[in-house]
Image (cartoon, rainbow, N blue to C red; front, side):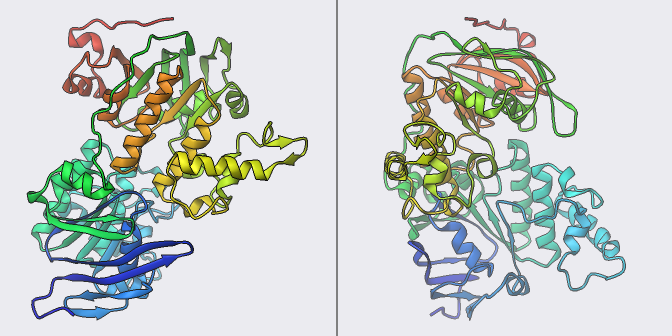
Length: 517
C-alpha cells in the first residue's frame, strides 16, 4: 500500500492473462513525476500490454494501480485522459482521410458541433510552436510522413491535457534526425514537470533519453535501475537473460555468379512521382549487398519492383539471367526468391489465419504440402512446429492466429517460412525493424548463415550499424539514385552519412569500385 510520499504511479502485483499466455506476471514497480522512465524488454515481454492497462484499453486480472497514492481502476481511455494520461501508440490511431485538426476534434467533448476545428487550429498552432512540433492543421493524415503523424498523436494527447505521456516504440518509424528532435521535445516536457513513459527495446535510446529504466522479461520485472548507474551490456543481459553479441563474425566466402542484376531501373511512387532513377547494381551468390539511406529515398519502391509488387517504368530486373521485369509476385517466388517485406503485418502475413496457414502461403500449391487438390495438414503442422522450434517463436500452438503474435515473433515466422524454402536470393527490407536487440541479433546471424551457404542477399535497411556490420558491399541511395557503391569498411560512418545526405562518392575524393559479374 502506497505511503504518504508515494510516487506518481505504482503498479502493485499486476497480472494480465490472454488465452495460453500470461502477458504480465505480478508486475510491481513505481514511476516518479517529472521523469523519463523507459520500459525495456524483448518483443512480447509485456511492455505494451502493461501500458494498455494504464491507458484503460485492458483491465488487469489481478493487482492494483495507484495514481498519486490513490488506487484507480482505469476502465477506459476516456477515464485515463480524465486522469491526465495520454498514449501514442506504435501504430497510429488516426483517420487517414481527415485533416490534422479534424483528428484532434474527434471525440473531444468541448469541440463545437458547427465548426469544430476553428478554435482547435488556433490552440493546436500554439502547442506546436511551444514544443517545436511543426504540423499543418489543414493537411490530410495520408499526406503526412510517419514523423509528422507522430507529432499529431503527441499534440492530440497534449491538447487533451496529458501530464503523463506514454510513447510506445516512438522511434521505430523515425529517421535519426526526427528521433533527435523528438528527444528534444521530451526533454522540454520533462522540464515542465510532465512524466514520460518510453516503451522501447533500443538500448542506445534508453541510455540517451531516460532517467530510470525498468526491464521486463517474459511478463515479469527483472529490475528497475537509474540509467546513469548501468550500461548497454548489463541492460541487454537483464533483458534477454544472456550475453548479446553486438559484433557478429561475417563468414568469408568468394562471390559466386550474379543472382540478381538490375539495369537502368526506373519506377514511380504512389503519388506518380519518380522514386527510382536509373538504378543499376548486382548481387552475387554468397554476398550481402546493403542498401543504405534515409527513409523515403526509394527503398520501398525498389523492393516492390524486385518482388513483382510494383511496376517499373523502364529498365530490367534479371534473376539468374532471366528477365523478370514486371512479372507477378508468384513468378518471382517460383524463382527461389525469398522476400522479407518492410510491412510485415500487411505484406508478410494474413493476420486472421493460423500460423500453419501462414507458413504455407507460398507453398500450398506444391509438393510436399499439396497432393492434387488436398493439403496434407499433418505435414504442414509438423513443418510449422519445426519452424517454431528452430526460430524460437513464442506461441501456444500452430493454430494460433498470426495477428496475436508480437512483432518479433511475426518477423521470426516470416523468416522461418522464407528460409525453409531454400532460396537462392533473399530480398530483406528492414528485417530487424522494430525488433529488440536479441531478435535483431538472431535475424542478422541468420542472414549471415544464409550467405555462408551461398545465398545472395539484398539487405535494405535504414540502420547504418546493421548495414555496415553484416554487408560485404554497401550502395547508398538518395532520392532514388545510388550515390556510390563501396566495399564494407572502405568509408567511415561520417562519409557514408554524407552519401546518405546526397553527396556523390566522387565528391568525397574517392573512386567507386565497380564489382560486376
